[in-house]
Amino acid sequence: MKKHSSKRQTARARIDARETGTTVGLDIGDAHIHVAVLNQNGELIWEGRIRTREVELRRWLAELPTSVVALETGPHSRWIAAAARQCGHDVIVANVRRVRLIYGGEIKTDQLDAEKLARLARADRKLLFPIEHRPEKEHADLAVIAAREALVKMRTEAINMVRGVVKAAGARVADCAAEAFTGRANEVLPALLRNALGPILEEIDGLNERIREYDEGIEHLARTEYPETELLTQVAGVGTLSALTFRLTIGSGERFSRSRDVGGYVGLRPKRDQSGERDPDLGITKAGNPRLRRTLVNCAHYILGPFGPDCDLRRWGLELARAGNRKGAKKRAIVAVARKLAVLLHRLLVSGEVYEPLRNSRGIPGKAVTAA
Image (tube, rainbow, N blue to C red; front, side, top):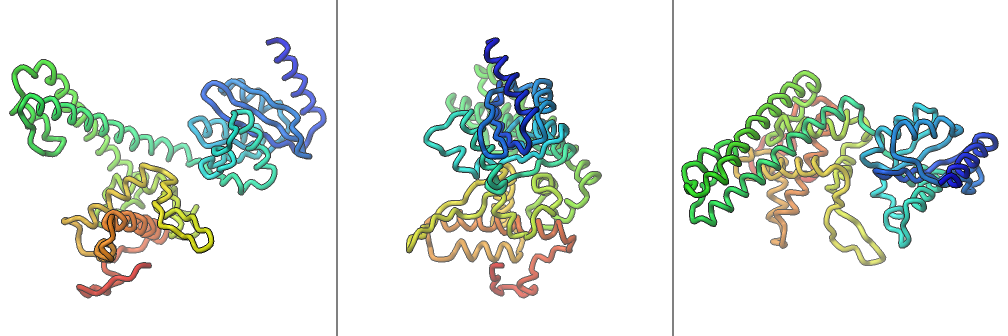
C-alpha cells in the first residue's frame, strides 16, 4: 500500500513539474474513479484511481496542471464536472451511450475506459457527443416530478397486489380511478383478508394524499417559475405535468437549432442500419430521457384516443394508423404522433405562438393533413 502511494505521489509531481497540455480521462464508479492522464504527445504518463469523495477528488484536481478532463454521464457526473471546472480545467461530459468504442469493446475494464475517454477527448471532443448538465434549480425542480412518479409507481404496485389477493379469494375490485380504489376495495374485501390488506389500503390513501400535494406543488411551480409552460398546454392532451416535464428536460429550447431535432433527442426517431441495397425498418432508438419519452407517448395516446379533439395532429396520426393494414400500424402511429408532438411543443416554446389545432387543414373538416 505504501509503495502504491509513493508511486502515485511521484507521478503526480512529474505531471506538475514537466507537463502541459495534458488530457485526463475519468471512469467514475461509486467507490473509485479510475484515472488516465495523457501528455501533449498522447503518451500515458499516469494511471491510477481516486476514491469517489469530493474532498479527495478536489485535492487531486487542484494539484493537476490545467487539463482537458473527460468523464461519462452518470449519477456523480454533475458534481465532479462542477469540481473540475472550479479547479480551472476544461471539462467534457461524454454521452457514453453514443460512444460504442467505450461501452461495446471486447475487452472492457475501468482503467481502459478511462484511457479511451482521454484519447477520444484529445483527438476530437465531438467524438464523445458532449452534453451540458441542466442548471441546479431546474435539476431540483425536475426531482419533484421524479418523486411524484416514484409515488405513483408505489401506489400502482400496492393496488395491483390488493387486486390479486382479493381475486384469489373469489372476489373482485371493480375498475376505478386510483383515488377511488380503497372505497371500492373495502366494499368487497373478505373478512379474513382485512388484517392483511387493511394497512395496505391505508397506505394507498396516504399515497393518494401525497400525490395530490405533489400535483398542487407542480401546478404552483409551473405557474410561478415556468409560465412558458402555458404555451404547451394549449395542445389538447398536454397537461401541466407533461408541459413542465418537457420544459425541464429539454431546457429553454435554445439548445436545439431546429425543432425537428427534438424527436431524435428523446429517442423517438427510427434506428437506421443501411448497407448497400439493405435498409430494413427498425424500431426507435430510445435514446435520451425515458420519462419524457413516456410522457409524450401518453399524450399521443390521448390525442389518437376516443376523447382526443379534432386537430391536424390527430388527423395525421389516424391516417397513419389506417395506412396499409400493416401489423403494428397503430403503435407506429402513436410513436409518430409523439415525435411530431415533441417538435410542435418545442416550436411553441421557442416562438411563443398561439396554437392553431387545424392550421394545416385551414379549419376545413375532412381535408387531408400532410406530414411536416
